[in-house]
Image (tube, rainbow, N blue to C red; front, side, top):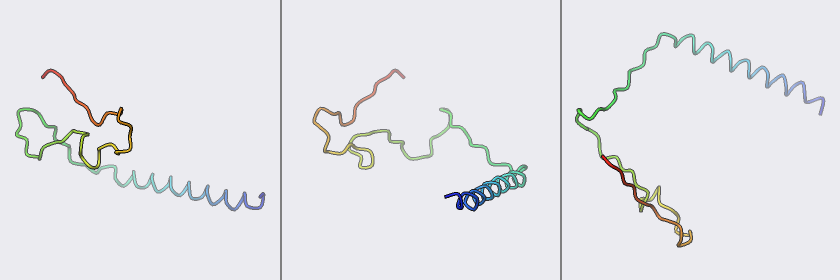
Length: 82
């Protein structure tokens, strides 16, 4: 076991140091890069996207598996003042 400690340990240390150096170089070269600003939606703007669906009932990727007990709820409701 002691014979593997140095080769494996040194390999891990060298790979970690190399990863840190690559990250520092990457940050140095991308220092002046400007990314586009995300435009926030406000209610006075027109909504150009499709409808946003927030439901957990009878939608295949989100619905509960049918092996649950009958006491478990399959979805629910929400209410609030606008």
